[in-house]
Image 1: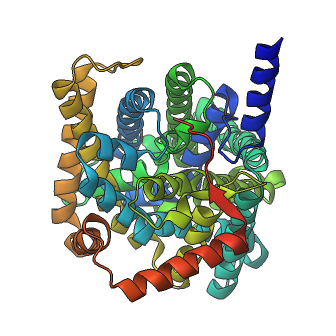
Image 2: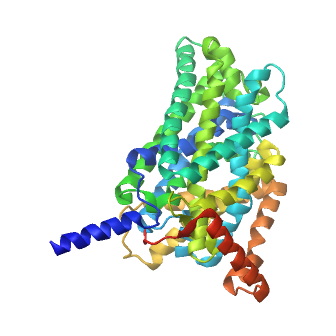
Image 3: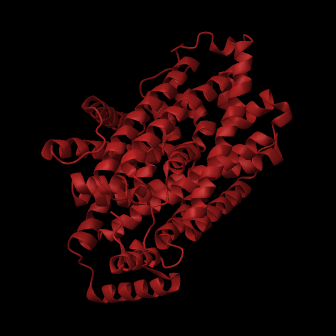
Length: 482
């Protein structure tokens, strides 16, 4: 009897304690991956893939290969997620396998420009699809597109600050909406194809316009559309039974997304010529005008909601990396705190907001993809290389889910190959991305490794942190969740 009362008290204490709860089951995990992967990419990136691949057939091949490649990467991350039970994704795995400096640099570039740039790209796509239908066939005002984009980001930040449950339900709802949007595009395309409308696929593999230096950019655009398969690893500590749900959610999600993406592109090329696709800034809207006259006005709304879902997934997952980084001492402690009632990582979520606003002011939409791709893929390659090193150094370490070695090696080699080719294809953006990454080295040694800040600065910093903690009503976790 006494033991039962003690257990009840312990459960009650844990329920009332400040910590992140395990609330993500299999369905939310699947919706989280699909909802984050399927965003603006499939509705904008077809232009970039076709532009850089040079032909219809080769662009479809690029989409299929990008899907298989992303599945390989996702399987590698499924092993990492079941091996290391901490949240934080790339940051955690680099910390565990290669040490603190690579982990800090990943954290540094993620919040210096990768995450804000990606969020900016998706939010601009959201703004474009909301505004353009009201101005067609004229060009929509850029200022209005950016204003609507800011409203979308603000809504997503508010939801993720308010409640984990609300953010999860929002993600599930938006995932079903975006799958419905893709089905609406696929069906008329498949029907037209079945009726013999195949003229756009004639001579589909012409390589006259193909150049080797542009092909990596085609893969970058395709891989950007598949980006997001690693976001479940950011929230490992909130997933119920990760040993089972991680591999299942990842395999089901990536196979589904790959099949849908290829079919959507087939539908595009069935109803639009390559020239028409290249001239369109909003491919799905142009397709709807051509194939869905009665429902043409619905597609932009569905695509906008799809972008909102990807934005929500990014703001749900990415702050957990900052949260874990602060918990490990690589970022100010205020960012490792959660709201005492809402149980959300409030400071980490709010930190992203002004960064996104700054990048949203200016930035060409296609340059943003190329600018962030180098850093993202370089650190993914380092992460899977670290996984190989960890396997070699600790062969008996428990791994509930283990990927065949050939998949890990293939994925790692191709990642490094793409990174090296990007230096040749787009040296300007790649060079800037590399330079910004390296700026994290002196920051690490001055503020983390030795903590050389002057005493007065530390006092001011600690005072500001304390006031922010009181203002935001946040505290450190009281229960260990890993």
